[in-house]
Amino acid sequence: MIMSASSFPSLALGCFLLVLVVELHVARGLSRGSMLDVGSGGTVAPPVTSGICASSVVIYGYKCQEFDVVTQDGYILSVQRIPEGRAGGGGGGGGGTNKQPVLIQHGVLVDGMTWLLNPPDQDLPLILADNGFDVWIANTRGTRFSRRHTSLDPANADFWDWSWDEVVQFDVPAVFDFIHGKTGQKIDYVGHSLGTLVALASLSEGKLVDKLQSAALVSPIAYLSHMTTALGVAAVKAFVGEIVKSGGLVEFDPKGKPVANFLQVLCANPGVNCYDLLAALTGKNCCLNVSTVDLFLKNEPQPTSTKNMVHLAQIARDGVLAKYNYGIPGFNVMHYGDVRPPVYNLSNIPRDFPIFLSYGGKDALSDPKDVQRLLDSLKLHDVGKLTIQFIENYAHADFIMGVNAKDVVYSQVLSFFKNQQ
Image (cartoon, rainbow, N blue to C red; front, side, top):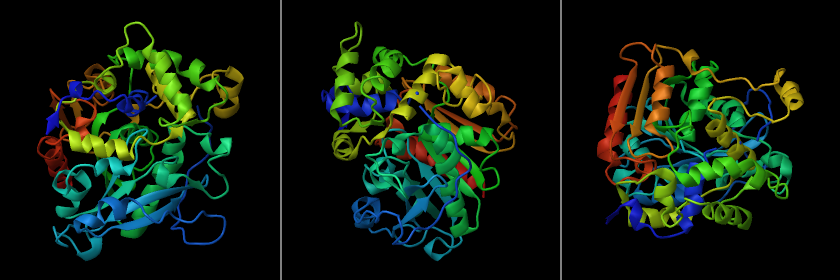
């Protein structure tokens, strides 16, 4: 059964949506991350025994491996590998040996499970595996399977002292280095929402260029100035004062009471309609299945750092894609050597780097006007190296949970990747 966004009355979706809307403002700064395949012993916490492979991949007849990747700043990230299709084939060598690796990166307040909520023939990771790709799924720091560190506990405030700047600086390079070390090949990349932002920011700083073959960016987030929802605008305006100053909240957990209280305050704003939160935050998704949404609510949303949300809010408020702004000139000078945080200059992305970009006409987070600004940054890209898809009736969640995403979006992603081989 397909449902429109207006069919979802559940306030529970609000947390997820606030989740996606506030892909939004706190951070520190370190240097390039490295990664290790972690075993047992030492200060590393024991791995989670039941993870994404067991719950959402192996049950459908696919091989799946769980890995731990350690970043240079000590976070232990859960990564899944689906080395071959269900029939063991799909082209390439056995066990993923000579197959083209592809890394799939989720957005904010969700984890790698979000790619595996539909039936297997509709899930992007499994579609890619069946078509001969060596598939890897990332899980960002702070989410349930990446809630570990070599020395810090999640109960410690220092564990949450990061924003997407650190994801760019540590998580993404660590996972890429790990996959490259296992396969010896350049890697294709798929990102959704915040997963697109970290890729764009990385490329703008010259990272990943030696290990990345191409990137497919769906529902891209680089600018958030044109969010079209009253709830989203209210969240951006309130975020720093309401959350950061209320008791030193460092973990932003959509399932926790402080965030629920925050949402109630936002819903009290004039002009904010919280009856249909999914549509209010992501736009009116055209193609969601009720059973998929039910499964989503059993697994998501996931925690992130309050800093991360504040940083995202800064993009929406300031209209500039920059590193985290500490708000006090002296703090910025201490971290960056300047009173203002450095800007991520997207025009620095190599012009010959292959990019596929897909966006929706109904997306209230990745608004077409903001996407156009992103495209303006890429206007000097080499002819034939930038492929653009516009889907008039798609909103933010359709790209990962839409029942027809297989035919509308994923088929185009697949063709794009095969054209790079």
